[in-house]
Length: 306
Image 1 (cartoon, rainbow, N blue to C red):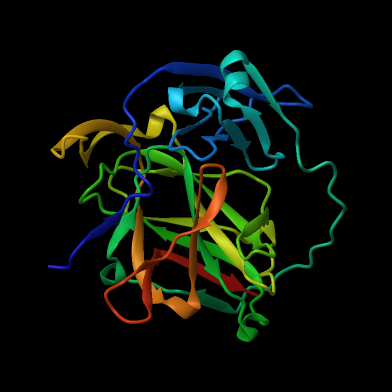
Image 2: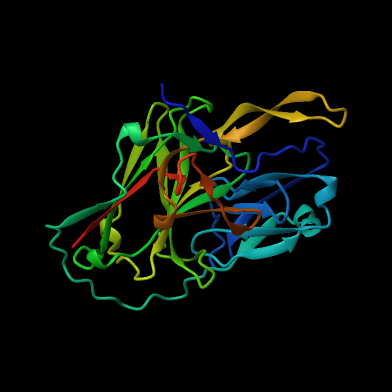
């Protein structure tokens, strides 16, 4: 029987509840609510996502009162305010980051050539990443290769989900985001500006995402495919975590986790890079396998076409 591994991203071990911030995130130009905004207390383990109507609820702990909160969402400039201001504010406005798109002429794609990057079978799956206790992104770097020139368009993604051995795989939602690579080697700008929200069924073990209508070409310095977990009530379920208390005794506490959990596979370290977004910024996140020169990566297949 294959060993199943699960990597929880920085689990939450804070239990002393103090304050609760409630409000709504709105578009600064139109006043429309913004769904699925990542709301994270910087340098903290606390965060949440806005719901479809833009509303949010975030528990604030005493130790975080002097910190700041960063709000991030597709198509909007990041915004940072103090925790104190968050507790006093009911409406938060984000400025759109896309003022006006220049007209672009897209030539018709023939699509008679295809190339799969990182093709996977079910027996290539070794566990998963998740499920988080707050909003988070896990991203996989795909480097550009010279042989991609004949199939330069992004056609589709296939994302494998964790089978739920250690997590509650349930009906849930997550967002797909594609990023350019910044000078620091971390995700930088969005390549697709439309929301790609994926609905996952309870027994679903993979999802297929058609990217062909976006007519995005593979950047020559590579790209990141990011799976964004949403801390919304629809995704929530009750889990447990184990920790050692100040007296040296191990305790188990109930916590809220958010589905889904994404499957993992292994790859050569030189071929890929894994990052995750939490606490309001991107971090490198490499988990090495027992095998030499290999690491665990999200189980994602990217298909290209001409």
